Image 1 (cartoon, rainbow, N blue to C red):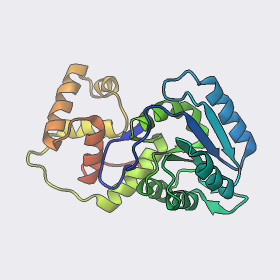
Image 2 (image 1 turned 30 degrees about the vertical axis):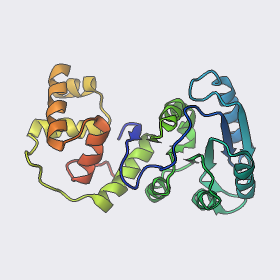
Image 3 (image 1 turned 90 degrees about the horizontal axis):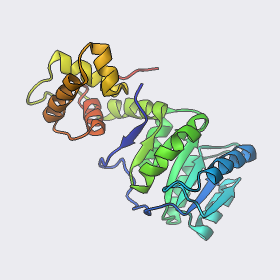
Image 4 (image 1 turned 180 degrees about the vertical axis):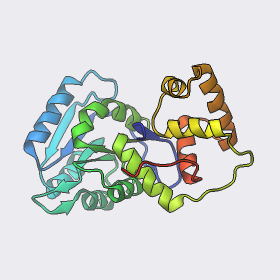
Amino acid sequence: MVMPSVIEAYPGLTPQVSGPKRFRSLLIADDDSQYRQGLRAFLELSRQSSSAWFQQIYEASSSSDCIDMAIAHRPDLILLDLEFLDDEVSGLEIFEKLKAVSYPGKVAIISGHSSAGEIFKAIKLGACGYLLKDQLVAHLPAALSAWVENRVYLGTEAATRFFQVFQSKYGGRTALIEPLTPRENEVLQLLVEGASNQSIAKRLYVTTATVKAHLTAIFNKLQVTSRTQALIKAVKLGLVRLDEE
């Protein structure tokens, strides 16, 4: 599976709103009161984090409350539940309404499931991230650090689903000026699956220095400068396989 991913600037896939250097206020929009309370408790314990020192934490239990609070308080970040069961309103519909009223902050989608279509729609709409509820606490510190730097953050499963749709929409094998060697293809595949340099070295029975040399060659041939850019381009060019599961 793909590692927790920060998607770097890519046309049409990253939010266009510049975020604050540090989040000061947060709105938790979820119709599950116990989940809101648990998340608030976690954030209260994380107040000293450089990117999560929320001075104000608001809660909304319905779509109308979410819109009203976004207008009234203009929080820096909204954690928006994808499924509002009481209202039978999709979180993406609420997101579109927030855009319609010119809400200036960031919106991250949280959900109980990883629908590939919903994930792709959320990022296309301009969401700064998509995190599964049962993994939110584990990923939130890294996600907040990415969001304050105006980057998109996806958890492991969400990243896999996103790139599956991305590949189907924008894929198609394209010849490189200089093709990858069989070993470089192996390294690239393991990279997309989320393996670290050490893990790749262990699986291929080589040294980490050799892995780094392969990565340098891969980056040069793909004309990229980072692992994330290599992942995106590899998917776009159809150079790797994505786990359908």
